[in-house]
Image (tube, rainbow, N blue to C red; front, side):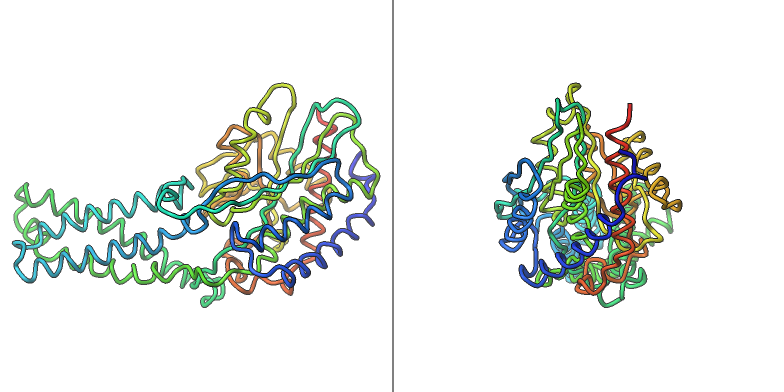
Length: 424
């Protein structure tokens, strides 16, 4: 079947269904912190829905530490504040002679803090998980099998967990000014503090005249400014408040569910293409669910027998920013070019000509976890990168849903599935 022959009434009905279902999930199941009972209860609800039009559904368990990913904001902030204050006190009370030893203390601690930040926040490594309590979380998988032998498999994925509230985005109403001041100031200050500490240590052993004297006697006061910024980093995440997650990412969750539902309602049966809906938990905890699923299915999804591609959907809201995100994880991960092009071409076939390749320049989507395992993947999303005023805060509720954006996203997803089935 070509997309032009797919019944538009089915898509519209599923958009209405999505809005009603998202409202119901938020009201009935409450805050969906990564891996908590509410998340699992919502997934069980989805399984009952999927059982009606799928050949097989099941849960896959894995272990994760929900707070390990973003708790670096508090750990790093506390370590650096203590190091700066301790160094200052030791120097001013003459316990150590001058500020050289204090610079060494700050340089080492800030260096450690930057490594934690890089591994956790930029590279999404499970760097700190060892130090946190782990819980059992679940990914939900539903499969619609073809009539004949499986030769192709396309997975539509969305994450069901919601984010901890980022205070600067809530109080700054999504504008970068407050977010940049807190996160940018803290990270930028830490980088400069590390550089200054290294230069000062070098200046202590190499005689640069007045420059060495200045660095040894006065540069330490910059670290105090860094410590002040660390207060903002410490307060950055509110672990007690969970976003309702209507747009981020129940829209992506129901994109996966409705992909199979729409095929069923339209009576579409493929000869050799298997379609899978995969609902992950733990995306907001550092892609933990997607990483676990990708690792468990790497051999299956990269075998030569069945061509497999994963289309991750994350936030279908801001239509003017609906793009195919071919680069991910702060631009460090490049998704499969051919599959990304297929989705982009499908967007144009579905009547949305403004789509283009884009870059997740801050953060990451689940698609990055698959690409890192060598699995063909890309991401479809529609969110204002400013960022949106509902991003990661309590404003992301069902009253902020945008049916037109959901409808456009669903058209692109259906067109992508049909084109994947038809491709040579």
